[in-house]
Length: 201
Image 1 (cartoon, rainbow, N blue to C red):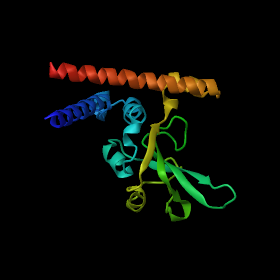
Image 2 (tube, rainbow, N blue to C red):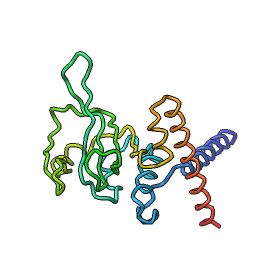
Image 3 (cartoon, rainbow, N blue to C red):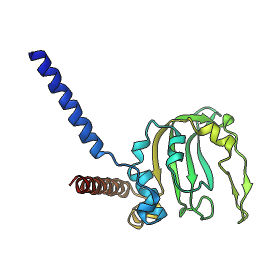
């Protein structure tokens, strides 16, 4: 009987912990809930709650993304003492600014396992403004869809308070930027808990 009570108590603890964890998670919020504000939509879903995508496939993130992907870019890293180039990050450009501008609306994906550059097939095309871009073709999607995500962020430069810190280019400013984002996460968690409580009441 005592053993049974211990098992039930442990089950209850696991259940409660699971409930607390679920309450602390930041759920995806649709574009319309931000009054179609692109910056706020991208910032919340892909930076504030970017850690929710850790371990998931790129295809899962793309399925969530409600904005059209206009172009992509990648960050290449070359191993020290080697000519081997690996793609470590992929950017999904969803804004309508000129490609690679600091004012772009983009989602940045850091990969768990880098992609060897030689295996990555891309095709440049020219858009209406005469800029070369890399569209997310079906062929390219097949190459990246099952890649696992390490982390996701978006362009903090679009948020005025963060932009001022980024432009300082100091270690102290970078630390302050992290604190600002963590405070925003805490505020969102509080807001979501209050919304859930209002629904339950």
